Image 1 (cartoon, one colour):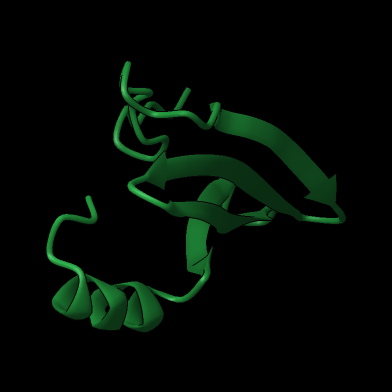
Image 2 (tube, one colour):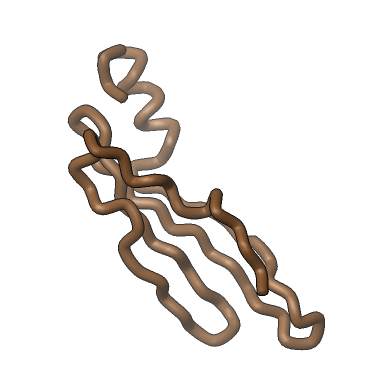
Length: 83
C-alpha cells in the first residue's frame, strides 16, 4: 500500500471550494481532481499517475492547473491581497 498525504490540498475553512473532487481512472492512468479557491479565484488541479503492472508501481506523470499558475502569479502582482 502506498501512502502520501501531500497530494490532496487540505480544505481550509475560508476556502469556498470543496478541495478533493474526484478520481478518474482510464487504462493504467488515474487522475486526482481537486478544486480550491482563494480571493476571487477558483483553481482546478489535476494530478495524474500511471500504474505500471510489470513493475507493480505507480509513477507520477504531471499536475495541470487551471487557470495556470503563471496567470495567477501575474494577477497576484497586480492585486497583492489575493490569496
